[in-house]
Length: 488
Image 1 (cartoon, one colour):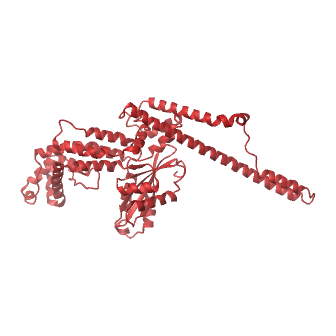
Image 2 (image 1 turned 45 degrees about the vertical axis):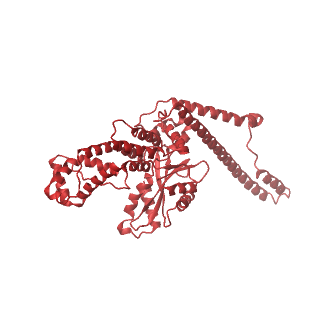
Image 3 (image 1 turned 30 degrees about the vertical axis):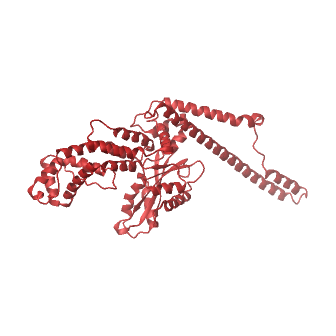
């Protein structure tokens, strides 16, 4: 499948084993001929050197070479986290375009908002409460009892983790759900004696926490949506970024705390995906039939996006035609050579058989061999012979140009499909109607919006490099991770 793919997208991320060995995993994403997204683990390599961009680029280049992914007409996008060393690695390895993981982008923007002083203090207080219950079996038992009395779900409190997306949102949302039980448990004399340094939240604090959870909910939802590994997600980056920017716009009813959070989040996320990257992502969005109207753009911007699509789709179509012509000529030449070889063998046999009868026959045989070793070129039709050099290329170009114009017009005039519909199913059914546009859509839509495919490997690797296998060699780690993730 990778060998025949017109386009491939890579994701990569690093992780550390139980034996404190550092690894980097590379996955490949493609859309097959049935318009289905497929993900493969290519390799997992130990990275014993410093995690510099140059060292990571070396690993990426080796992967491209080993899997023979560097070939004409194959665009290879790469999705990574937002670390600066990944910028260097992707650039040095020659991959393009480089997409920053949207989940990481949203997480970084959230952290900016959560760093607002008032919010940071609230988080510290909630964190101390959740940690207290996690460390005390007695307090946990009392909390469970209060949950039963108050008919609340018997859920455990959550403590956020810096490296886990949305964990702060989850911590605050769970605290709000259980605040009555938490307050009741902390009021018990036996618990209160051991929780003197814990400050419970008053009504004003609870109100702020509710506002914070409400503000963060769209970011949580966005992260969840783009982690889908069955449907295209790269086309969601621009619409989701636009949605987040809209939800972070100032409102006269905002408290000062929420206003400060919005400002911090908006400032951070507005700078993401700019320049050429933004142009490419807008094109990805346009080629998703759910968003083809590009309603988040003005008329001039929409025309600009579709003008670029027109140019790129035409160029890709021309490239594919040229390659097809070359392959066809190569096939014809191979067939001619094979036929010539067979004829040459026949002549040699006849010449050998007639050698005793006449001394002149080998000369004729040699003449025949000379003729067949240089087969005549394929015959042209009369019209091609007369006008081919003047009209063939021009006519093809005009037809291609007219074709892409009609395809884009038809595509743009179509009604956007429902948001819960599958864009890949739509393209599977309609690709025949857009023979020039469809290959570009497939090239773009295979790119994931996140580096989740490579990050999901970590959980698998954790099972493989267990405490009992902590001394497993890097070569066996690579093999077992490969087999585990590609077995289906």
